[in-house]
Length: 111
Length: 115
Image (cartoon, rainbow over the protein chains, first blue to last red):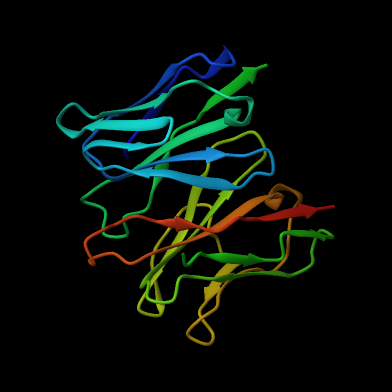
């Protein structure tokens, strides 16, 4: 099955700093999504981005499907950005389109 | 904006007891999923459901698990005889699929604690 690798596994930032999180896939995926897991454990959907670039406030994401990776950019980080960021993708040959998740990037933003 | 809801938010049960986790998917969605996340680990696929039947299940989804869409709105996950290792966060998701997007919309999760 598809392997999803996220880097870095852990990241500590000072408030106001920018960061880039990366997600690599071992094979072609569609249905690529980025999530933020908050301290209560909820998965907050950030982006559905099978290809191209999207922006939402201080966050943006880019997926290069032909090279099997996606990037999540966080600009001017705030303490509320802390948490775990997951990417997930689905194998287009998989009729169920189940999402395969990476292991996450744990982000801590210090005031 | 429509959203997926799940109840209860937290359930504590004793080993060997049956639990039913409930989900209300977004109303015009056709594909439904359950995922789970053991504390500190990544989110894992359990089962997908379409047209009133299971379309795929993972190795985790053994005979102790079952899913049902009893009334056209609710989507439930039943664990017949819970084990300590079933303690996890369980997420329900739904997707419109084929309506221009394959995005999955996740509920807030049910935290299951088996003692």
